[in-house]
Image (cartoon, rainbow, N blue to C red; front, side, top):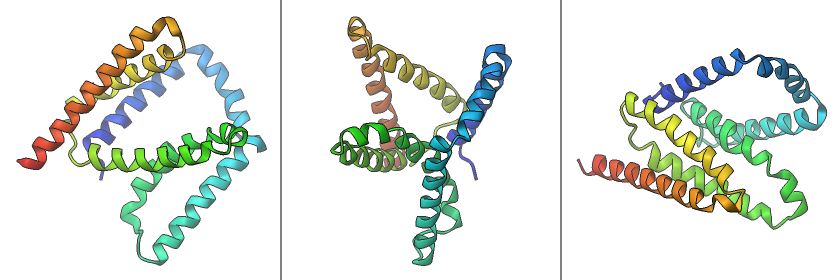
Length: 178
């Protein structure tokens, strides 16, 4: 069963895909992107990663630590954290010490987000408002952090993220206590 956050993500995802497909240059570039996904340099690591996750799921299911009710969370983890971590491979191959950092980031971030953010989901209208707002702040922050002249903007955007994060944490604490 989908919660309000997941419904909101699906709605905004559908809006984004519809908008992107309405742009002629995006439609023209879609073919080459899809063709590049089937090249061995990209498809083999993705297939190996999915196979590895399926193997882990089978082992966990065998020992009783995974069942079909975990499928949604497993898929979200695979699409989100695991797939994005795959892009860290070039940095890890250049700097093997980076592997420890990536593993700690993935495990720590996944556990924290799953535990805190999903304890209580907000009303659908609020989730529909927060998702594009926080996405915009995150994208702007990513751009601002790459240029020294935007340091003040980056600091301001990190402050916004902190305030929203504290607000969500406060919401969760209030929900827990009531």
